[in-house]
Image (cartoon, rainbow, N blue to C red; front, top):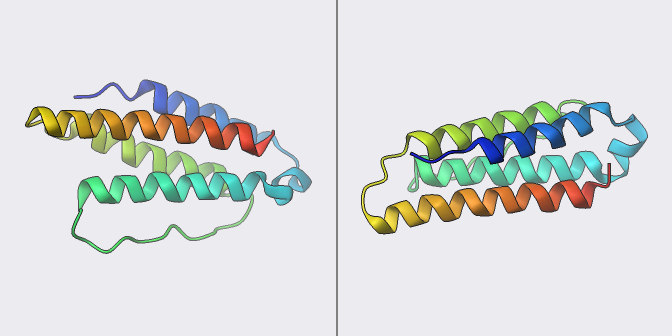
Amino acid sequence: MLDTTELTATVERFADRLRAAPQSRLQRGAAAEGLALARDLALRAQRLEAPDAPPRTMPDAGVFAVADQLVVACNDLAEILRTAPAGSPARRELLRRELDEAVAAVRRAAATATL
């Protein structure tokens, strides 16, 4: 069982910044950065939950919905990481690496979005 607090807290901060951003800032790329991150987190969750299923792409619901899409994708991934059976040492390492990479992706996206 992994502690995903850092992931969810980092995403919540980024989502709050997206929610508070003016439309002009969102349209200049911040929303696109948030959507790309939401899609990345959703694909990570899908790969862990159903590795053999074809991936589904999160739709673009508009600049004002991206923060919520990001939080939903993050919560899905966090829940999978929290509840996934650890199993072998290799499996535990895979889950830990997935969590670390997701946190790093969130930090990069938040920095790139310049909010």
